[in-house]
Amino acid sequence: MLLLATLIALFAERLAPSLAESRSLAWFDGYFNALRGRLNVPGWLALLVMVAPWALLAAALQSLFHGVLWGLLELAFSVAVLFLALRPGSIDPAIDGYVEAREKGEDGAARHHAEHLLGGSVPQSVEEEVRAVADTLLLEANERWVAPILWFVLLGPMGAIIYRLTVEVGHRAEAGAACEAARLLRAALDWLPARLLAAMYILSGSFEEGLNAWRQDGQVSVGATHGGPMSRATELEQENRDLLLRVGRASLRTEDYGITTEIGESGEIEADASIVRAARGLVLRSIIVIVAIIALLTLGDWIA
Image (tube, rainbow, N blue to C red; front, side, top):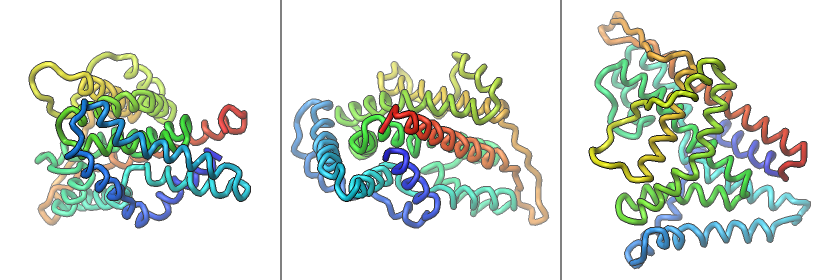
């Protein structure tokens, strides 16, 4: 059941990007906004009130649907929950558009796609921009696919709901105790998936280089950090991101992330964006290996 639901949700996202683009958790906004102005409780309690009812509802519905119509109703419910729990939007069209535009020297189009992929401003340097896009793919694979799938496999639809709504509360709260609680829980929930994904990067890429990178303790720059002592949430987030970037880059055999550029006939800078293709390929192979592991565990009756 879990394997079939995972496969259907992933195929739906892959084969129907327009459906993935329309996927949204806007329904959660009303609930969140109604509670945010009324809750005057500690951050962890506020997070519990925002997330727990939906998680319990998912668990109750799964139990209610169990065995109904030969399990088809439960399967449909599981697919719907996992599909919604995957990060909203599809990145494949933006990746294809970015690589094509950057290699053709279409700077405006490339930067437009880069802004979509990076979620905001992009580096001024073309080389840094290409590296940032590749890094984003290596990092986002955890939140976009691996973490929701892993918690879905471990806890069922309830696990996928807990993960996605925790992420959403962290984004919507922006600041305050509830935001900090959501960030810490999200970072804790990311800890195991991040290590699973890093292991898959090693198996799906350059094994020796990736394994050596896993053993290193040095930190990789993943963005500016504010001065002063880091909170536990920030520290754990940095640890997860550092591992994924360090191992992912090494598994791609691109430790220096060298980017070749030249001036095209139009006078625009044409850049070799093959590292972005390679990063997407590494992520895709890693997801396939994870699904294969789920299949083996299912066939071995380790999971239902």
